[in-house]
Image 1 (tube, one colour):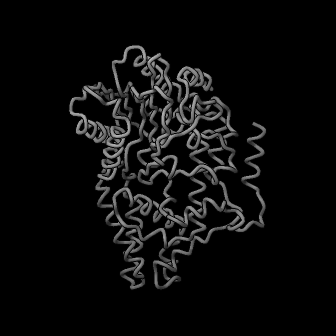
Image 2: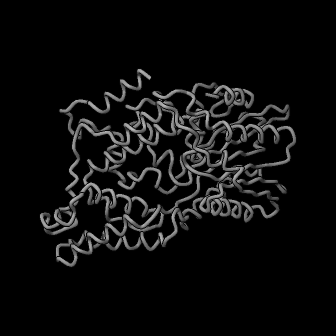
Image 3: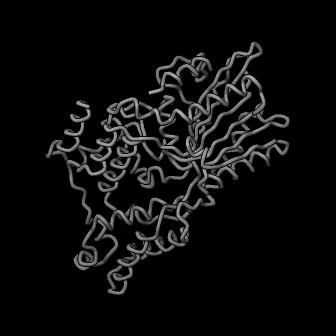
Amino acid sequence: MKHVLILLAALTLGGATLTAQDYMVPELADALREDRMRCGGNLIPYSHGDLTETPAPRGYKPFYISHYARHGSRHTWGDKGYLYVLDILGKADSLGILSPAGRKVMDETLMVMEAWDGMDGRLSQRGVREHQEMAHRMVKRFPEVFRGSPRIRAIGSTVQRSLISMNAFTTAIAADRPRTRWTMDTGEKFMNYIGDTGHATPDVKELRATIKDRKWDFQADTSYVLGRLFTDSLAAARLVPEVNKFNDALFNVATITRCWDIEDYILDELSFEWLYQTTSNESHYVFAKYGNAAEITRERLASAHELADDILAKADEVISSGEYAVDLRFGHDYPLHTLVAYIGIEGPGSKLAFDEIDKYWWQWRELCMGSNLQMIFYRNKAGRVLVKFLYQEQERMLRGLESVSGPYYDWETVRANFDGFRR
């Protein structure tokens, strides 16, 4: 706990003379300037990684896939923020002080509110497409697994957006392989591992509370937006007494737009320093709560053991019996984040100190909508089993574990490593 307290002191006190430019990590700042929508973190639609295939060692053929995916692109919750933005912009319009940019923002907010349509967490048609396309790529990349009349199990979270994602994925496979035989299920029992985000140990709670409320060593210009959306900044200031609240509401409208194929005009009107601050703060908070932060105790990741146990049990069953070709699971982002940290998947599950997060762990890349882990199992004629890990459909290595060749690991070594990560 001592090293946690030292970290907290550094975060909260810091050097008062730092500027925004001194504080910003160049890699993250450059990435956000390249596409400001990345500020939305885990609200960003799915984007797969490099699909390059490293050839398997000679004599090995894929025979089984074990999979966990977050639901596809969705909406957020409630209309309070939308109504707040529309109220302010509507009043500005009646006073004749709404700029052309402000009018575009008002139109955008109306479109986002219409897409929400009173349905919290509603899966978008983009979210449906994400899972359909992901399934088609899986069949195309690993045709050996889907030959003949393969049996596939699919388990979904009870949440509608996960079930519709499961439907999109499974029907796409069925379209490519009509002879597939299916077992599909959902229910509260499965939520113990499909949707569980686990407990927070005391050091996580302490980090989380500090990160949530921490202050930067520089003050972002929250009033910047007033000069962009209104023609009279002084009159606008009277309309918007809580500028930070207004920024937050605008940010929440903007960062969900791409999930609905709506063009965004808002993020360009917000201060870049404020956007960086918000993006970095949220990443630190999520990583503290669910990730593999170097400052937390190992017990935090133990909550992933039920999901890991399901993966192990079903893989061992398939290896011994060969009854199923694929196990599909459809859930949520935070259980997936904890799982890949538990397994040790490099990238999303990397072990990082807090001062490394802005440089190496970016939410829009590691925890976007539709994020997924695929474990591809290979076997040779002698019966030896290898496995490789795909995250966002891209080959990944395991932290601190030696492979047989490239991204291919001996299954017994991986299996023992799963047990070793009981932390």
